[in-house]
Length: 253
Image 1 (cartoon, rainbow, N blue to C red):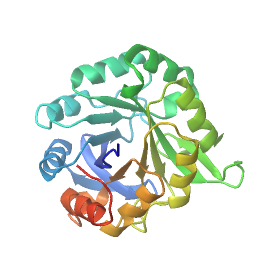
Image 2 (image 1 turned 90 degrees about the horizontal axis):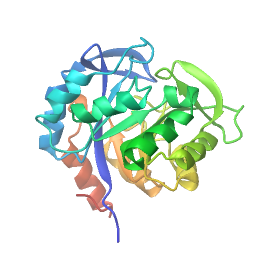
Image 3 (image 1 turned 180 degrees about the horizontal axis):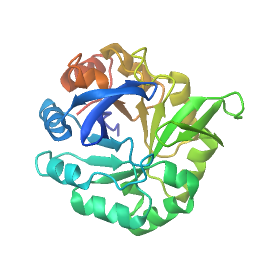
Image 4 (image 1 turned 120 degrees about the vertical axis):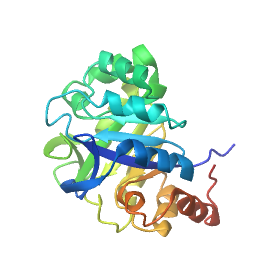
C-alpha cells in the first residue's frame, strides 16, 4: 500500500517570531508563528514543524508558550525542535501540545540522548534533524553541523543518520544548508544518499523555490517535503504544491 507524501511548512522561530534567511544567514522577520501555523493548517498542511533556531546558540529552553498556543488552534501533527537536551524537555514539549520532537546539536554532543528519548517515548516521537553541508573531508561527501548551522563537525552525515536510526530515531529531517533559501531546488543527491541508508521516513528540506521542485525530491526518495520561505512569502500555497505533486503522479492527502 502506498503512503501519501506529506507537505510540511517549516517555521524557523527566533525571539518569538518566524524568521527566514539564506544558507542559515541574514535572518529576517516573516511573521507570527501561531498565525502562520493556523494559515497553513487551513491550507491543508499535513504537519507543522517549528524549529527554534537560536535556542541552542543562546543556551536556553525552547518555546513552550508558542507550542501551546499553536496546539490549541492547529489540529495536525506538530514537530518542535531547537534547544531539546533532555527527556524532560521532550516531556514538557509533549505536554505543551507537540506530537513529535526534533533533536540535533544535543544528540550529536551526546548520542545516548537518542536512545533515552526513544526508550521513554517511542521512536515515533523522535525526529533526528540533520543540518548538512558538503565536505570533501567526509567519506560520503556530507557532514552535519550544529548550533543552527554555525558549527561544522567532522561527523559524516550518512554514518550519523545510520547510528541514530539504530539508537531509535523514527524519522530524518534532512536539511541542506547549501540549498537552504536559494530556491534552486532540493539537493537531490543528498536526498538520494540519505534514502539509501535510511529505514525510516526521510523529510527533504532546503531549496524549494517552485512547485516543480517538489516531485523530484519525492522521486529521489523523500517521504515528505518541507519548505519555509516560499510559503511565508505567499509565493505558493500548500494546495498548489499538493496539486503539483498529484499531477506528477505522487499520492498526496
